[in-house]
Image 1 (cartoon, helix red, strand yellow):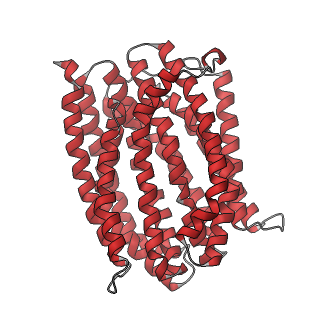
Image 2 (spheres, helix red, strand yellow):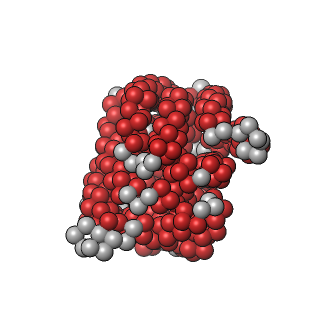
Image 3 (cartoon, one colour):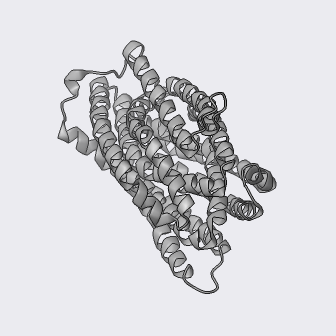
Length: 447
């Protein structure tokens, strides 16, 4: 356990965010390696895997539900110096993880085909996406165990074990991707099925490694079988905080799925370009996401210790660090968009769409960084409903207008990107306004 209620807040944020950012940057290498070999299979494969990859957002909605609730409650318990409460929450989160894994496994296998038919018209795109999902679903199901353990460590202020495990799994994924996708060394390429299988095997290794750490090294929170009997009161605590955050990711899943759906009229090449652009965007934004992940335990422990000044300072420090990071990343993407997209795009149309998308969403990065920071603060305060409300503004201001525009004779794919930028500004303003209200309301103990 690491006490985050003392010392420099900026230092705590950087020390916690740095290993997570490095791990995420290494994960970026996997994303690019995976994308590189899938790209060699053609635009239909890229479009299919890209659309199928968005299915991960639905699973992430469930993992966030578990992660956010566990991190918030465990960090509060640590701040209040209540180790028994932290252990109870951790072990109950493991029980919830097992239940969610079963839901994800059954739901993933059942919905893979229908989901792809909803997003694509091209039979090759549908086949590629469905195949990828069927091989990746077991890995998605195992994510819950990984999230439960890593969230417990993050709530106690410890990130190094998760960082090491993440590095190992990413390296394993990078090694397996060319072997399974392209058949390098085996002569038996599995194509998109190999991409899904590589991810599943890597996640499996991560679960095993982190389990070994908990069995042998972790002392503050640990596996206790006597705490595995379901306790509905604890589940309610976790879900009250986690469900809204899960809903936030569910809205993101809807948002991205709508884009795939409305641009299918422009063909598989356009979907491929968008899929590449999204992967690149997600990769380059990971450092800012790492900062927001550090916000929750730092502010959470200080909230548990009833130190209002340090809670507020956490937001301002994280917002500044995140803003600077996002501006740098945005400039890099603007200048290097043709290279980033061109390395993976197969054909001029996919390149054109991908570059246009990435250069336009660069304008989102600063606002998105502030939204991430607000989300981390809502988690720390133990009320994540405001995140849902701010994300919900995009459903109203983006999804409904883009569905209307998509059936108009003048509709062009660029209209999607323009609307996206405008709606992120609205989301940022909503998030900041809602956070201001939450800070006033929930830090009353300082008065």
